[in-house]
Image (cartoon, rainbow, N blue to C red; front, side, top):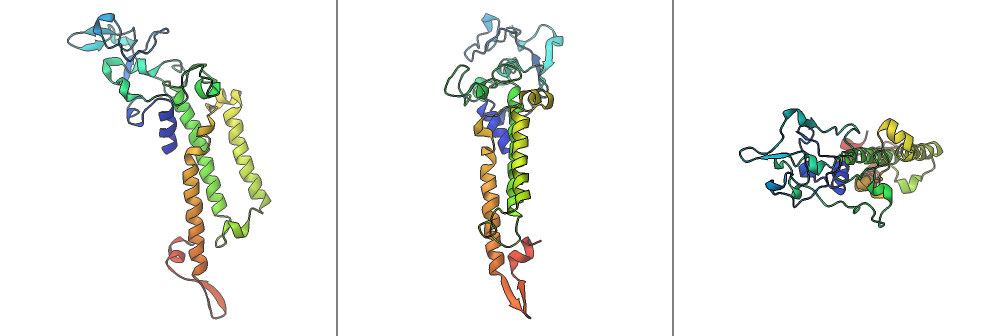
Length: 251
């Protein structure tokens, strides 16, 4: 969940804004409409740049025909070229302050690679589009793999520290390498982006959001094993482990 929220926030969608977005219906903006946060005047025939809206003094911003209300396809690519700020301008359901500033700048900003800013599938800016959700899902996949790898490394030994045991299991090492290599292929081979819905995520989102959880898992397990070793006593000629840590965390 943290990875989801972080990636969406980086692409302009504030975590507090995402609730119930899927259930709303509104008129899709015109193909040439450009978002303008200052466009709030009812007399100019648009709202925030969405020219498919009309204004009724008694009802506020509305449409001439209820059939024009469409549900945005967040789980599909049919609306991937829609600026969601224009779409959710309907009846002021989402105001300019409900969106964040895109972390990777505007299109054409040479400070970041192009694939940080533009979707390789839709050829449309990722920020403020439904593509942001696809990128969040891809980053979440990497986070799952990273935390699974942390669990595997922590479970290599029952008592010994990773420093004492070392990374000497060649099959385990191959499994870790293969797991991350497979994820990289799924994310960065473009035909698979279309077939599987993956995306070429930015380096900032590749395992970085979950890194803090990885470190927490690693140090928790190392500390737990220290107490396990300290609880080891010799009784009746045999080594036994005693203590609260053994009783509640040793399986």
